[in-house]
Image (tube, rainbow, N blue to C red; front, top):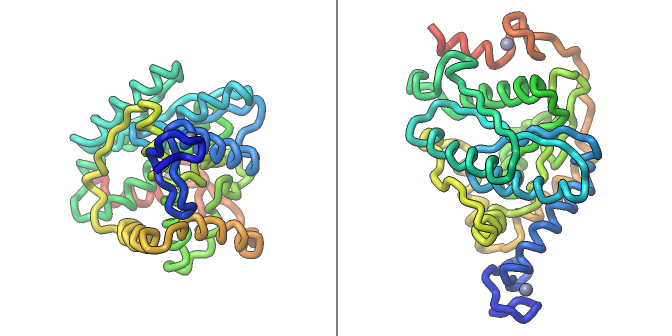
Amino acid sequence: MKCKCGKKAVFYRSHEGTGYCKKCLCYQVEKTFKRTVKKNGLIKKGDKLAVAISGGKDSSVLLYLLRDIQKNIPFEMFAISIDEGIKGYRNKSLIFAKKLAKSLGIKHHIFSFKDNIKITLDEMPKNRKHCTYCGVFRRYLLNKKSLGLHAKKLALGHNMDDEAQSIIMNVMRDDLSRFNRLGAFPEHSKNSKFIPRIKPLRNISEKEITAYAIIKKISFYEEECPMSHDNFRRDVQSVLNDIENKHAGTKIKIVSFYDKVKTYTNIKKKGKMKYCQKCGEPSANDLCKTCELLKKVLK
Ligand SMILES: [Zn+2]
Ligand SMILES: [Zn+2]
């Protein structure tokens, strides 16, 4: 198969029925990235971004592409990683994260569960829902530490597959509040203790990100987290992949439909924000989710 430019195609976009050569695929990925940034006003001149990186493909490509558009938009950034303390996994992936940040000349901060919440994921009782705990603690630290380092926004490597899964998951859970918090630039609280999050890769598929990383020789850690088995997201991912294989373009359509529907579902939440009595971070209740869960695992 040939690319439209005449060169040998290395990638096939089945929903378009078109082949892409290396150069044209990279151009396409970069174009989509820039369009998402521009259309949603993700980065402004003079911004300071905290970029969450794990050493995996998505966040590695994110950091690389952000470095690239600094040529066009003057903004500052640093990389940030959370070490949950999953032996044999996170320690290995962080080697890739460190190497990439260094090669791009970007300052990199690593914060561990051990130092900051006193317990690693490995040390938590095994009957816990690991992904829930891990997610809550990770988001808590990313928010707190990014703000502590004076970032204005937190950039995350969520790709289009992640986004389509989240949309469907929230439909299946009848969770309108979480549903409304998706998108490339989710609605954020005006509270200065919450960092706004941006998802510049939100319109690029996982396959294209992987291909881009390989073509650009961005090395990344390929293993999946050993703790995350049998969760809801995995099930939704597998169903969506099956449907995508039979009906190419389904994921793009889910994401596009979301953008159309969001205008109607986005009802502002009322209710006053409180602060956690224990740690002082913003919280819906007397104790924030992190402190509440920590009470269960720390004896
Ligand atoms: Zn081409
Ligand atoms: Zn708290």
